[in-house]
Length: 436
Ligand SMILES: [Zn+2]
Image 1 (cartoon, helix red, strand yellow):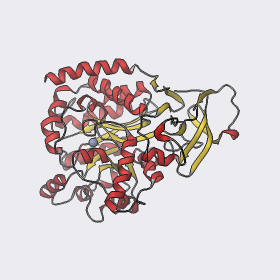
Image 2 (cartoon, helix red, strand yellow):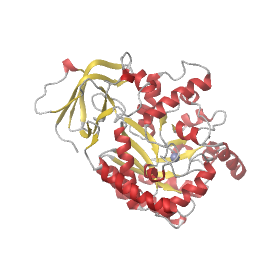
Image 3 (tube, helix red, strand yellow):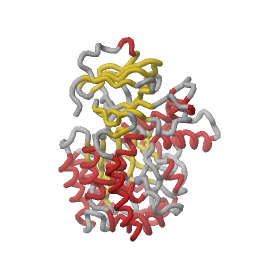
């Protein structure tokens, strides 16, 4: 953890919607923000570590509310397929063969490097063998809500489905309160791969341990058809009929919601996490973001796994999500820039239970911030930083990254671990995956 004082100064500051200063500064004490505003009014420097933004844009770190980080190993292994074929014929067999705790540690480190270098400081990651992932994110210094996967067939680290819930319990108990930046939880894969009994057990465990619970929900029309056949209900109605919807913290995808279901999610306090690039690549459909927001639903953004996206760059999601909202509605005013950007900040923070901690640069919040280079042709000139972030930036402009007051990226170089070594080891592992 970072101790002491930090001052970030020397560039424009976009601290959240409606909070912009052409020359700003952020000060922090022991990892928590004490000042964010015009540089001229910043508190005295004495003894502070200073990060010079060098004219770069200072802004809150992005929050990726849903991914499967360790799937970096399977990036590009199988593409251009529908979800069921991709999942059942390619991903599940590859996972059964290659996923263990060392794989998730190594490949989650690679994911952490990719996310930090594209401005993500907080991640919601759901996968198997999460002990390895937790060690990786802890070593990387990222803030992470890590959810152990739960599914009704043999899975890596849980060969007996009956023991899956115990694996979740073991993971949550091992990491709860262990590391200040890591929150453990449970991820039920979906209503079509988890029986009502499994979902009930997940909800019960999360109640008992007071930990987050997420699931994929209403991702494809096939899922809607399957759930109708099995339970004579839509995916959302199925959870509601089981009495579990109110316990769920976040529903990932929400592409195929029935009439009134956005309102129901809002009433039950379930956040929707949208993953537009993955939904587009798998041709699953487009979630109705403006409908969800109008219904009062909290809406966050995620990249989903790097095998269905194929990257972990959250600004790409913001850009696509904004453009899709306009395209689908026929209204260019739909989801304007600051609102789109805020899905990856306040919306994702809500989905991960981190409201008031991350997503803004203001006193009392954690000092999780990024500095983006603006001295680039595609970001010149600058009238409106939110516009650049949503419509022009690529995510590769990130120069500095700070999490809880600790600098993790300096001049585009990850400080907390050796990225070259991680890439070399993942390439080695990929050679074995390729050989089959
Ligand atoms: Zn997913």
